[in-house]
Each structure stands twice: as C-alpha cells, then as structure tokens.
Amino acid sequence: MMSQWVDICNVSDLQPDSGVCALVDETQVAIFYLAEDELVYAIDNYDPFGKVHVLSRGMIGDIKGEPMVASPLYKQHFNLKTGLCLEDETVQVPAYGARINGERVEINLSGAGQ
Image 1 (tube, rainbow, N blue to C red):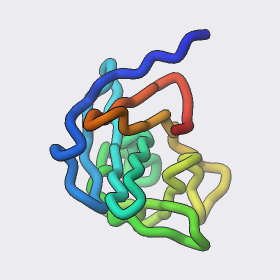
Image 2: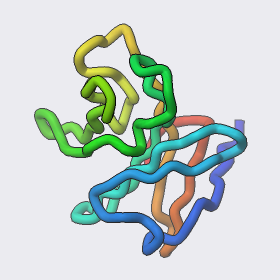
Image 3: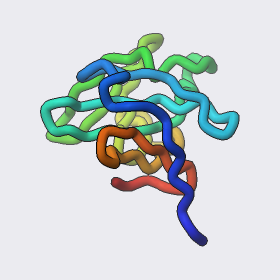
Image 4: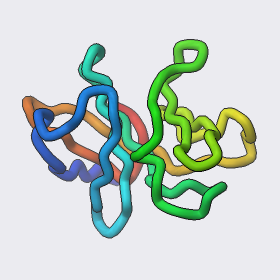
C-alpha cells in the first residue's frame, strides 16, 4: 500500500511547542510542533475520556524522554509517537505520520512515523 502524504501548511503557520487542529480527509488531526527539535507529531484530536475533539489544545512536554500531550479536560497524557494513554494503556488514539518537507508540514493518515 502506497503511503499518501497530504500537504497541510507552512511550518511558519505553526506555533512553536504548541498544537493546532487540521481537518485532513474529514479527520480532525492534532498537530504538534516541537521547534527545538524541528519535529512535528500528529495524533487524532478526539479525547476518548472527555468525548470531544480537544487534544490539539493540550499542553505538550515529555515524560521519561517521550513526547506527550496532556488533555486539557481531564489531564490524561497521550504519547505523541504512539497515541497511547500513559495513565490507561487500554486506551489509545490513532497516531499519524507527520513530517516537515522543506518548509511544508505533511500528514499521512495511513500510519505513524517521520
């Protein structure tokens, strides 16, 4: 299966060390830009605990060196690489491929990875 990268925006459109939401093929995707490392991560924007699309509004950081976002509602932490909830490993949100290609941000809904 060939991967499908979708052009989303310019890197300069993102806020450093923060999240934004983008609609990609009718899926709300939370995109996080870690400016110091020049990396982008993408997970589903849906918070399975609060049952609303808000993860892009969460605070980002790291736990034991792994990038994560804390939900703005009930504060569960989700790994930005895998989508796994750190407080409840039975819960996971989809993680998507995200990369910076030149000055453009691209998302791949078919899988994770840079």
